[in-house]
Length: 525
Image (cartoon, rainbow, N blue to C red):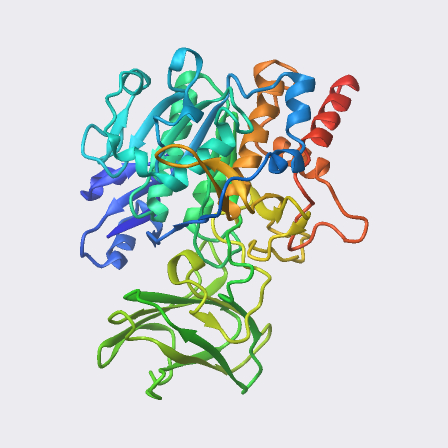
């Protein structure tokens, strides 16, 4: 099994298959070995298992008109400033791209895709990595990429919105990483690869992540989020993350423990999946015990700190009730439930027993909609804090969704929450329903999900960086400066307060953002 490792010194001396991400982060493949042995090595300061992560869009209906572009105020920026994203690399981490689709053809029919790493293929991997096949710009132009990409629907649609010929940044160069069954370690590899490609070309870059997971505290405390934050500060870059489709998924529960109190958290399971997880996060100061009650009335007994594995016929429950690490003050209890398809279906209870309580607040998450659908759900869910990782990291731009024809927030859009420092986690919203985009295999279709919202912002960031970095109007227009101007220019309603959990700072409005940038340039700021 793969693990994310934060390290110092010579990590290769441990002898495990290793891929370096940077001077602090690496990916190690331990096979079946117990990861706790890692902490016996002085080079290892912390580790985290690779977690599954899912794409965040679905296809629906027929093609729409260009109201999504108009809703984000993109066309006026094209006309007034002549921006296309030229000179900027748009990197996409997704299911792949249909290289033969006209959306990705440039002048004289030459592909605008300049680099491709297919993690699912056998071949020569990029330097520093151990698997997959890398294809250079020349190999792509020569048609040497196998035709398996033509079925990459999710990635094709996302790429076309961000940088297709009819997308937001039609002049940008494109680099794509095709993921296998995605895990957090795959996302991290892909981000490093895309950053490396941009640096080799001397280009500013935007990286679009339209994938998400519920595995984590949702407060930027995992090694996965830490690496995304660190990468977002590398070079002249911007990382854009979809907020996820969990707003109406009933996969988040928020509750309060009381001293000597008992609270039942009920949830239904109805899935053909053979494994689901339940991730609970609480304050370490609070003392609490938990118990899982199965649909047939059997129970695990009290679950205290430590690891336990229990069997109930064909169902296995593996429970990891951890302690704080040196990079997180929170405490996680992770329950992995395994069983045959349909074998876990029914009403479950997570029984919570409060001991000595000071804070009392706790959050629990089920897997995402893309993993288990909406029939595996809490009976009394909480829609706030449904934004998925890695959009919960601090430095990326996190993007929710709205319906362009009505201007209303998409009910499925992942929500943030206001914390004591004023952070809402969500930055802004972009079109996410009925978005017309390229269909793998040719033609067009309409797509829905925050996977479609994120590339609107990625494309907008590419236009901004062409104006600022490439044309020399603002050499520092990347990373947090791009986020700040996008949030400032966002369209806000007079009837709402901002930032808020559903909209962040408002709707993407590139016209207002560019006006602000020009105003600051004229004032010498």
